[in-house]
Image 1: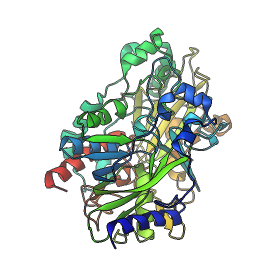
Image 2: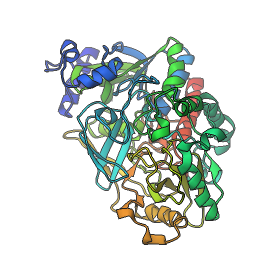
Image 3: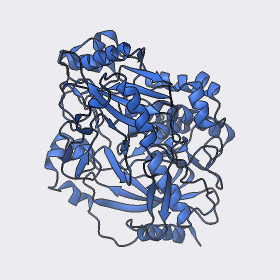
Image 4: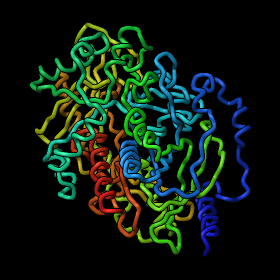
Length: 544
């Protein structure tokens, strides 16, 4: 089979999986139709940048990176610095920042800019919301027993998270990675490298003592009264921008409970401002928003070369173009769900038949639990989003509670304190694919969250005083979601110890899919980034 015929075949396979076919005569919205679309005139006015013509990658690129989050951005920068040409493919838009414009929607009453092509959302506050469909920044995937939140924008999770970057305790790290990754190497080399790149720091005293962080101070008082010592949290925040908000030099964003759907003024030092920027500055890496990767396959007769079927999307969801790209090296970093979906689908459909039995296995929620308890001070603040502190409890299964704002409520304190609980829990799910249509599902055990939900609630109750008397109509604890999906292509099982996918050359997993379902009672962003730094360094050094 010649190369052109093979690429056409990959496109046909994508069509049978429910995607637009590559090279076929299909009906798509032309670019000029998209430019005149009346569907979202308000978004065109608010954020005209994302409606600009999208660039197209070359037909063949030495290295393709799928995704643009923490693992992807690290990979792109280091490959580009090594002299390699890199195409970064991201399905979502590239959103700008501005101190006075409403680039992103607010968390409290969101519109379509908040969510990836859906019309309803019920968050941890249990308040159902409805809005217009659009290519917003947060993709909420509903599976039996659990909802999974993942990013859909350039910068990935760095745009839609609470900015928390914590290194796990050695004993918890080793429980999770079981000797595949050396904790001392991570602690001495790669965690510090990421901290320096992302300028991690703790909340300054003047900001902590401002009116925006009444809830943070009250949270600390409660945990001290319960016998805990609050530990300061490292974050990715730009404190100068937070000060601008407090002083009226920027529209309020992070200081009024905006974070999960983006900060319009760039208050988070997200990946667009460091790793991705650095990658582009080399002149060797280019980022391609609006490019959804549908399927991957190895080119026949060319072991170690890959065909990547791509759909080019407008922010409104119209298909602008479909095609197949090829590359010499393929780095999967589309997040735990995205990377796992591509691999599980490729194995089930025969596109990558040599993938081993561990593909799709070992998925976990990182033990995430949203918690609430009463606010016990009379002061009222404005729900600043950056997390100030955390506690660790090891009386049972290890669990941390982090001080949190209450997502999606009024920007003013409403008599509640929020916490994010993260439990060291070994519950795992797995991905499966129906080869007939290419649909990938997550199988999560029935009641899979019950154990870690109870453990997080137990610790939270020690701060309440009246135990289960505090229910707030069920708002006290929620483990029906995760914002930290991990696993599906676990390092040392689906891959070797550095992310090389077993059974294939020049195919790599560089993101949270490699992490074995948990990062040991902490948020995963720092560990994902440090692991990517470790792995890409070894891959470049060894030549593949």
